[in-house]
Length: 165
Image (tube, rainbow, N blue to C red; front, side):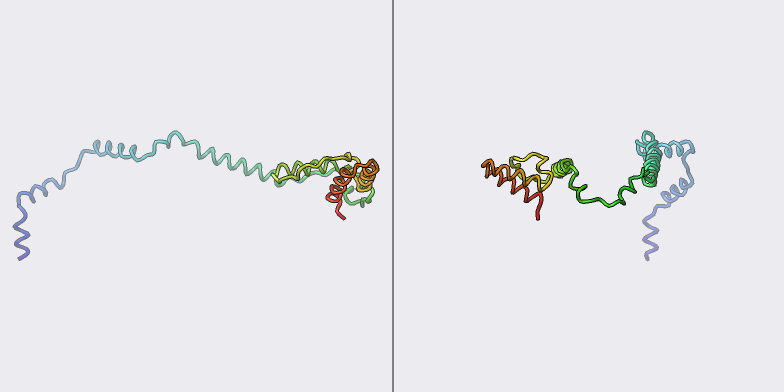
């Protein structure tokens, strides 16, 4: 029963027309033109303009890698400074060193790191007097002899911070 209904729904002329056109094909030049336009439509527009970026990136990576390898593998040359480091240094030699450049470098490092510095207190003893504990104490004693006790107290507080015992 289903076969009859299936046969009744199809017109034999329509079926014949479909069979006749089933073997038709478009001309090859039309197919080629359609394929060419489809290929052009699917290609991103920046391919031609940026074709040089990949080789340039590779060259840059290789150059930077070579520079880094050369920098890492270079051995620094020493000019006899190593022998001086092996000799013992006396305490007098260390105390005679000028500490002002070290203090200036420390202050600059604090400023660059953004660390909040203590508010500046007035300085009554000069940098030579502040170089060693004994010279600083002598300066404080001179301030006390002059009757400048507030200044001496301020310097004594700074001494305690710089040379904690």
